[in-house]
Image 1 (cartoon, one colour):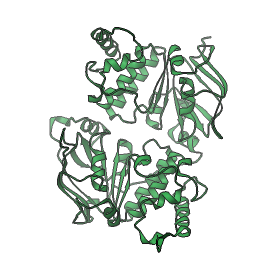
Image 2 (spheres, helix red, strand yellow):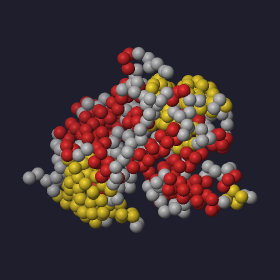
Image 3 (tube, helix red, strand yellow):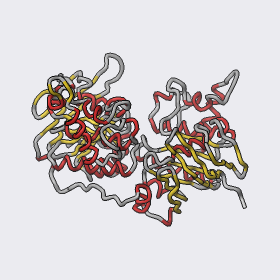
Image 4 (cartoon, helix red, strand yellow):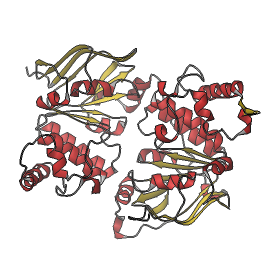
Length: 510
């Protein structure tokens, strides 16, 4: 009987007093695709980083093809044919694709043209079209993903670990990646991929391992389970999805946020935003779909006041706010959940009450003759913790001690109360587990029903389709069109996200 490609036996890993993995055993067979599911903090990334040599184990054993091995560094893992593609690519933007692929694996004089030809051959064998002589920073995200895979193929990887591999890809790119995984495994190789997307799990996984609180709680063959059962195993309870009322005409409400031909043009370089024009109405969720880095962050910065447009106007309830300060926009009733909560929304070394106060330092309700009204602030923070089901003891917990999903709920609770007119969500569920995503979706839908205007930026088309009334597709700083939900298919939106008009016609805006 052939030995498994990888066998992890009774692995335990602790960080200080936190148990990340407890007695985890996991087997990956030759030619098998194993999906690793779990909430944030379940321990799935930790166990794979142990296999790849990024973390050392405290207890347990690792076997590769039946032989016990000591994997202390990624170099040890790669020598055994193990490679890991992490969620955030490890590429050097100024180096070419070929240079990135061979980086660390060649010495002395490097005949780069010879390597480019060799790498082109490997790429074509796997159906990848990658320009080997162009700097990686100039390439689309989908091509960068392929370069990461080619780095693994170049060292003859037979065991490939992929952490959230489709997080930043268009639907077409995701489909292409799923096809690669199937073909790679069909050749006798093994794949472990960490994901929260059930569709991908049910499409390519042979076996599904579910983790919760650092332990394996279930293993299922794909044919023997359902998405609903997997979701229940992940979070320990049934989920009731937020439901959008598709019969309502949300454009009939008052215009709350209006962009009039807004552009953002740096002194040097190409325009970051080009002639953006739209209106969001009261009681409407307006979605922006697109691959990250196509102007979504800059658009949100202009709404929140971090940047000012170089041309055009931004109106809030008919008032020109183009040059207003961030403080003024908060007072006007704009709530903003940014894409990077650690950089722009919270301070991890502060407690939860202090984080709530961050955007309220000019609000008189929190102060009495210059002194903070701690009792009122603490009570309010505890009320937010309860209302948004945050897993925390009380207002005094440090923000950094919470999981990512619970940190996001705290930011969400603060911004929902600030945003009395307009709520801006920039990828609010990115990287979060299903339980946190479900809670955030319900809150967004509740605020829509309360008559607020909502802007939702997301790279997840399933989220856009589930939540939004109208959808703008963004590419290279432009809107490719604005459509009512249900007007376009996933494939059509995917083409627009890639900058391609479908059916050979210009996409018409509403």
